[in-house]
Length: 408
Ligand code: T4K
Image (cartoon, rainbow, N blue to C red):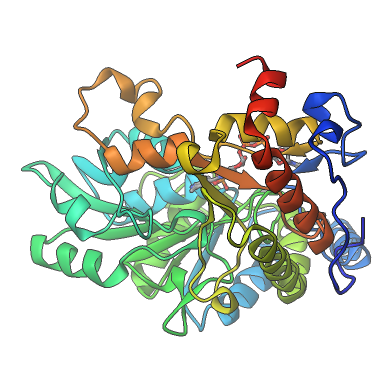
């Protein structure tokens, strides 16, 4: 396969007969596994030099020069918003909720990574799950409003897979009901709406810099807000509530990003435009390879140039495609394409949240049954994406043979 940085000019299918598929006994199309979430790694020399400087300075955490530079650089990238870097986005969400003074119930979509719900519950708040809009697959104002009750304390939107939630509708609803609006923007670095970074919307938003994200600081997160006082409260809470050497102003936790993490984060931000280009090229290759395939719909980015395209997700309609999502996944996994069922089975279906009675979430259930995330990022080349598209088409050309091989 071509390297991720080579321009892609198309390629011949890796397999041409169904009998060659690995589920029918053929050799896997890829010798090494292709992961969803393989880290993008910036300039190795710069990363190691940054960590070396931290070692030379003997300043490894607690507001060191790397952290300050990382927050400054991220703020610049986000148009000057206040940035409070954290050791991960989960704690970033928790701190943002505390700093916003949220109490009671928090309305959020069930269709998200479980960290979103856990962050709410860990703060002693009650997650109340809403359905999602069928187009954006994010919780919109109508879905959120249906779950607002007397105890609602906040709205927590999620820009799922880096695609925009209805930011205007949710903001209007929050204003009307007097509810703060927080966004889980874990997936959004590099995604914009109307020329503004997605993380700029809401009272605050939280980015993730986990290893699997478009840009990483090994582990990491960032609270982003236009509200300086909110950012200051969050920064204090991140460091045990300290405002000075001997002065603690309230409850806090330890959510500091290490200097090694910040050095990695800086190198990632330096490389971000290249990471975005690689993801967008892979997305274009998937779109071309899967165009017109009945029953397999690539979730659109609107437009791809202002989206990070970091999660490539297909919706598999089992009737139109002839194979279900899980059957297609089995085909791809046998080829060493480790496609993921993000975010199955949904927050509402895992403990402790499954113990509470839930209203029906029909759109969410459909997505959880049908969506499949495909490998992308700099470890994947457009030719790989095209090959995965071709393998999909080949499997769907004879669904009965595939189903027979899978023993369904
Ligand atoms: N909100 C949303 C919407 C989120 O998606 C997330 C995190 C959060 C909040 C919380 O953010 P953080 O607190 O994590 O900053 C992974 C990540 O651990 C998680 O951060 C991420 N979302 C989620 C979508 O994916 P898993 O359980 O799928 O991870 P795992 O270990 O199965 O790895 C995923 C794939 O990546 C595997 O195929 C292996 C590959 N991988 C992973 C790592 C860490 C590598 O190839 N190299 C690596 O270093 O959750």
